Image (cartoon, rainbow, N blue to C red):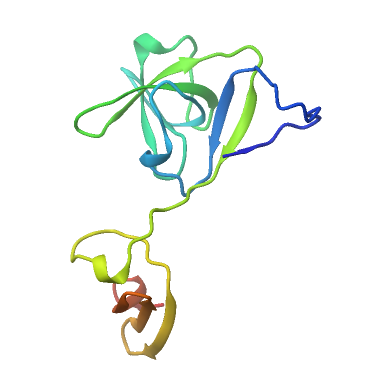
Length: 161
């Protein structure tokens, strides 16, 4: 996490509460219960509002936990109250009076080529050792210190990357 404190004295003793601003690629692994986040309303329903704290992290602020009325696109600060067993996130509206914002960048967990399993979504760091363009996807091989894996790239079904 990197702190973005304009005018910071450099003392490192800022005791104000932290509100995290997640990078667009942050995932649920980057959030913690009890922490506060900058959010944007992405949907309004009778029982509350749905908010995004990153492109892939969103959840519900139940109407009983809202102090204000919101419309799609409105910004607010939320606290992660609970990660439910089904993976849903429950937020509550937060209103810290004086806070500092810390930007959070996503650092994915890396998987070695040797550890890859069909069906898993992973991040592999390696070198592209071969590329072949086809009438469909672009086929390439990625290698790391544990092996080589074949992969394909396409923008969408039937559209070559």
